[in-house]
Length: 77
Image: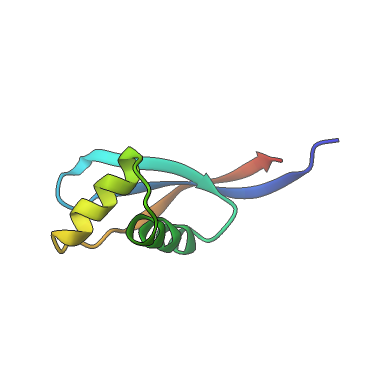
């Protein structure tokens, strides 16, 4: 039997380009906690995916990321 919990569908908008470029994800954590993990991972790990490279570049340019919840909804495990 699948267990259902609740979580957020969230968006991280490019701090330089605005809503033209963004990342959408889902988490059962607080959105701010998930954002901190994304930023930390992009800075401390040798991640080569597009999101990590994008976040590393913007951070090195001095931009600050923010995230917001788009929807709070059930998520199946």
